[in-house]
Image (tube, helix red, strand yellow):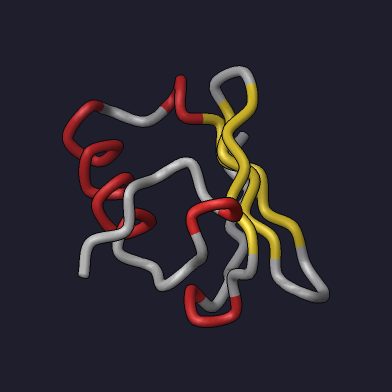
Length: 66
């Protein structure tokens, strides 16, 4: 079963990577993404988008691209 949740990328304050999941947090919400069920091309796109978010290095497992 796929659950559709929405989260405004601009509101993300923290990204954690834990055992195949990404945990995206805002001040009021948390979204868990199981990366094991995402096809490789979509996962690459997700990684690129999350890596481009303007978060401090201690709040993301991705390298920020400036």
